[in-house]
Image 1 (spheres, rainbow, N blue to C red):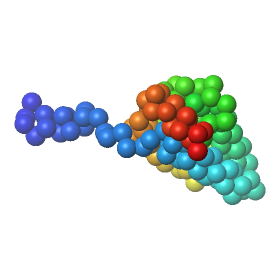
Image 2 (tube, helix red, strand yellow):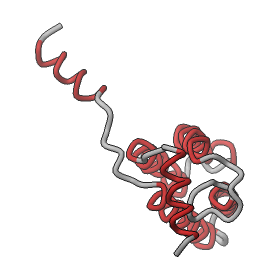
Image 3 (cartoon, helix red, strand yellow):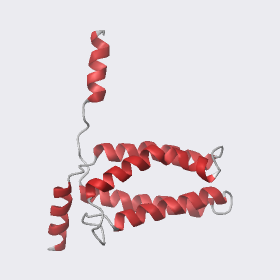
Length: 143
C-alpha cells in the first residue's frame, strides 16, 4: 500500500473528537423536532406524503428525546447510550424515508437525504457516555 493511501486510511479511521455533550445533544434533538415540524408545515399543501413523513419523524424524535436519560429528558427510560444506537440507525436509514412514504423523486426527499448526513455527523461528534448524561441530569436537577 502506498504511503499516502496508508496515511489517508489512518486519518479516516481515527475517531472524531466527542465535542457534543449529552446536554448539547438534547438541545440539538429538540431543534431537530422543530425542524421536521416546520418541514411538515411547509409541505402539507404541496406534498402530503413528505409532510406525513416529516411529522412522523419529528414525533419519533420528540418521543425519543422525552424518554431519554439526559438532562432534557422528561422520563428517563432510555439510556443515553441506547439513544445513540437509535440515532445511528436513524442516520443510516433517513435517506430511505422518502422511498417508504412514496416521495423519493421529489425536492422534499433531499431534506431527508441531507438529514442523514447531518444526523451521522451529530452521532459521530457526541459523547455517548451514560455516566456523563446522568451526571448532567443530576446537576441540572439541583439548580
